[in-house]
Image (tube, rainbow, N blue to C red; front, side, top):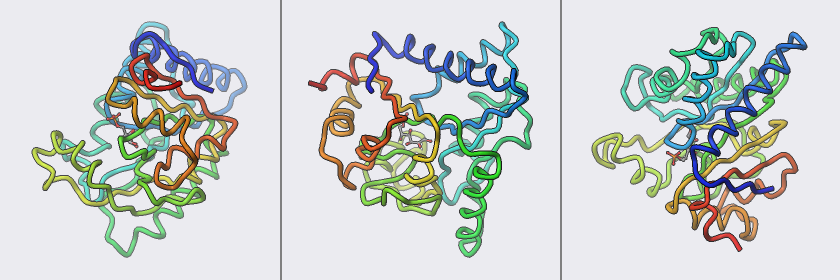
Length: 247
Ligand code: F6R
């Protein structure tokens, strides 16, 4: 299903509220809430609202376990473009989550360590009971996580090559496309699919063409997000601009 909100501020608050409700429901049952998280511009206001709820409404993250979708490879955690830094600055440093409960793919691995690491990442998600909720943005290539065109629907966590358009879109953060890593470690489409709930968010006119393809287009590996059409647990949460090309 697709839900369209007037603007990204309202939409972000709705998403944050759903996450908070999930966390509280799990708390009442003395269970952990396992969240799959995304970086980038899209979820920033969701995280801001969660921080506000933590500070003003006493929302605790002590029972929350997180797995981020992806990280550039190679990438040092201290680098200003790292997703470790992004998550710290935009969420984790401002809430009471336990550091041991945070998982972000490691951009510092040696090449030969990557395969085992990726399997272990999958296993860790399974060991805590699987993802209750996965948050997604969407890239202009149709990627979810960094599953670029050509990704298999049953793919797992792995090392991937970034699409040229994705690197161009990231060039501002890196001061030029030539500085954007060519690779990343990402959860697979199959990993994302196992989440019990999936929320894909998109804001602005810039995302309208890819949202049209993702929601209404023919399912195809050329637009990985079209695979979400197969899932009953997906919700597309859009602002009016991102939804503007839908029929
Ligand atoms: C980020 C991620 C990517 C982004 C996508 C959109 O962890 O997995 O798929 O969600 O590239 O990025 P923004 O939100 O910056 O437009």
